[in-house]
Image 1 (cartoon, helix red, strand yellow):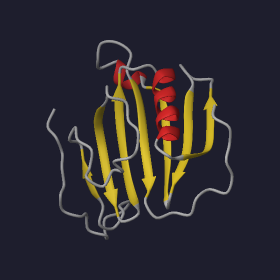
Image 2: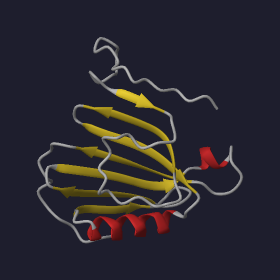
Image 3: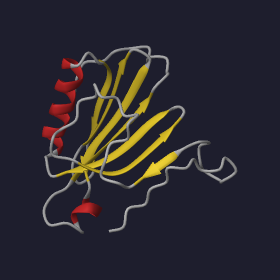
Length: 147
C-alpha cells in the first residue's frame, strides 16, 4: 500500500474540503493530536486530518470493541477528561459506541466498532475507532454516566 500524504494545505476552493486541512494515510499520529489523550497500545493509524479547528484520526485494532471502549473510558477519566456522553447502539454485526469527552477547551468524539470491510481484507476480526478533537470548542452542556 502506498501512503498518501499532503503536507501542503488543500486549496480552499476544492469542493468538500476544509481550508488549510492536511491529510495523511501514514501510520503516525499527527503532531497536533493531544498527547494527553489515551490510546490503546495495539493500534494502527489508517487516516488523519488536521485543520485549524482540530484533528481527526481513524484507527484499526485487533483489540475487541469492548476492550477498546473500556481502555478509552478508563484512560479518559484517569487523564482528567470529563465524560459528557457515552451511548452504545446495537443492531449491526456488533455494537457501536460513541463517547464524547472534554478537557479544557478541547472536546473529543470517539466512535468504536467492528469493521467487517477491514476484516474481509485482513485475517481475523478487526475493530476500528476514530477520534475527532475540536481544539477550541465550548464544552457540551451536560454530563452522562459511562456506558
